[in-house]
Length: 172
Image (tube, rainbow, N blue to C red; front, side, top):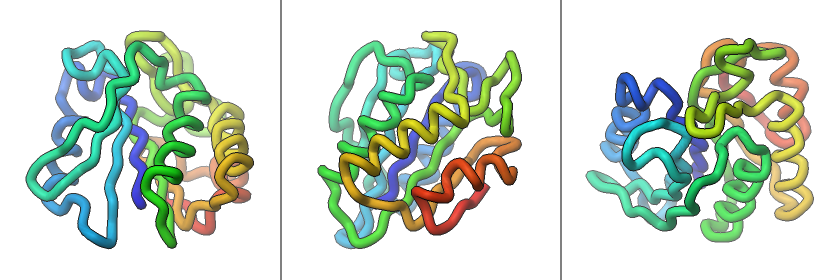
């Protein structure tokens, strides 16, 4: 099971980068052996103002749920996506990919560490990512085989230290 946490931000509202990446995922999609599930939201654009969960299929996507006006910069939103994904799509191996602007170990005022959610002016910090991962692990007992960041500046020792208890490998 591959879980993708996609905070659209201005990357989607200005450039449709999230939609482009979803289309790329649909070139392969899910199969009997691999499920690709994405949480989207966080952009000030139609279809991205609420948090949606989507199953990525070959050539299409299926909207599984619209959770409404949640902040993707809130660690509870990330935690709930992880626990839901593990419970709904049980697997032998799990990957988590976090997608958006990255701000490195301490973030910056414009982009935070991961984000920002344009609708809530909120981004995830490394301590908040750790909180979400810890709480999800406490609920599921599952460690990720891989945690990846499709985000700038996240290939740092601080990021690796933060996620190391919850994953075997980091790709950033």
